[in-house]
Image (cartoon, rainbow, N blue to C red):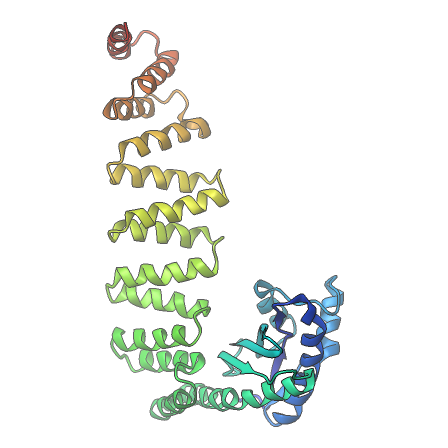
Length: 363
């Protein structure tokens, strides 16, 4: 396709570590948007203050709202940004210090992290100038990443690789260039190791790059590297703790690759977030049984019986709980579960005889 002449770039106010810097970050960002628009006018269309404020007000927010990290992507897409940057502003004494994350949405090439150190007492305009100057390398690397993608589209794979290499000279693990290179390697049918190398480079360049972690996990699985695949899923879970599917994958993955303690820990964290999640409870039961942790299996089975009405009076399930109670020598539990079973089959000799034996042994 034809390349855009200008990329729409969203520059968001960094979150101030000290709330007293709230005005500072907004003033600095207003200067930065204006300065970046002038500086990169041949490449960028910087989304200006009024457009950002209008979106916030129409969404019910104060126009000077620091957008929380988890909403940044949504705001960028609402404003049809091709790339965006957001971050934090800290201070070392009187010296401002900003850390920005730069994210590519639709082939702007802008990606990675940037740190900007100010001078003591920098007013907002001066610090904005420093941030704009620090963007020079980012924009150069982004140009090479865009060129890599454009050449890849035309199946000019050699030149695409050269462009990615130039991006890496400017920014060592440039995420967008690394992703472009992964596609080139796949198009050329390179081995899985080359593709893994490219995705690893992307995740080193941006540890919050969820798509790259997902792709990397998939390639590790293709390479038969289960342990590293589980590690990649761990990173995905850290970025998205409410994703239950990934949590199950991590729990089972850790359990089956020789880290049962971590597997149980991941599952417990899930149950703390959602105590009634029966998928997690059933998976925990399976893991307890596989680990031959009979006490754990007994406790979880009792929990399932209490919560899952389809198990009530199910003799197969009750017999398995009685068996677990006998295995761990828990007389009180055996009595409880024999009594529960006898409520449903009061005439059963298979239940009455052993139950009578346990009761007699108590006296």
